Image 1 (cartoon, rainbow, N blue to C red):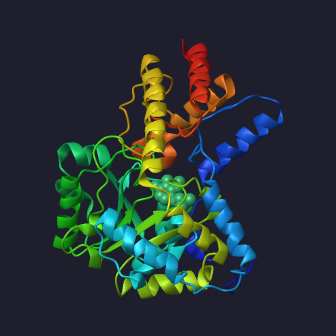
Image 2: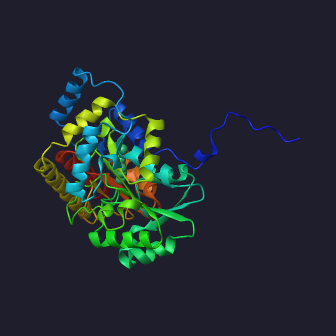
Length: 390
Ligand SMILES: Cc1ncc(COP(=O)(O)O)c(C=O)c1O
């Protein structure tokens, strides 16, 4: 007689879904700090500056004005209207108010995008190394991530390499620029190539533009602005990185039908909309002048240059990343296993990094340094590395 399976088990679709390795590094750093060790923290991905005062006061004002009731689950019209204008002016994406959806951060927009597009059995092309949660979001939707090595693709041709990793089940491409963790910024010509590939093979593109304001070399270019792409692209954005608002949990997705209706349902049944006062605060963030964003970008550039110069001096080869706020040096000089390198650096030099392999097999041999930290923290971290590496 067949034995009945216990009910005390989780749904199978979560079997292949991991829990962030980066959280494990964070926990270890907290433990070390609690035991009195001063850690040089390069493992994070949060802006070094605080949320602007005007944004905080806008939240307080919203609360005082009793903007505390349910908002439309897709977002307050004033914010969606302002974002439609921003998308038109800055990203050259002609979105209507109804094509903008407010989400609980970029992560939520991406989660909804994968859920809206992927069926079990589908394959998803993923440039690798990739931001770690993406793989789990893809497998959580029942699809198979097909890792496309970014460096090889850029060297040998994007079309040829994408072709190589495509199958009859390929449904979509995850297109992140500027990239986490490599700092790669795809050029307009590369966007055109990916777009032509998507159109030729009738694929959907999920464009992750979380770091759109952090480009030091080249320009940020939104793939959805290309002819024929708006209808097959879901673009995702966040207030986290540009405005120092990681803890506020607000971002947005841009898409046309039929995807927008699906995304709306997913937001409705997951969080039923982002907190109302947070949305009013985000509206205020959009009034921050471009010059402020630009001067922060210059501060990041200085940090990048100090870190990359120091790493290269130590023999940890590192190209200056063109965008985002991460350096991704080769560390095989220390050991070929990046987990072992990250553990050694943390234990011996008290320098916290993230092992490259957690960003996909193509990240092995590297570790990620986040440089969204004060300059003196970068200098102190480099000094600790010098003592350790010599
Ligand atoms: C590539 C990338 N996309 C999206 C996000 C989402 O950020 P959030 O959920 O804070 O908006 C992040 C955050 O680290 C990221 O690195």
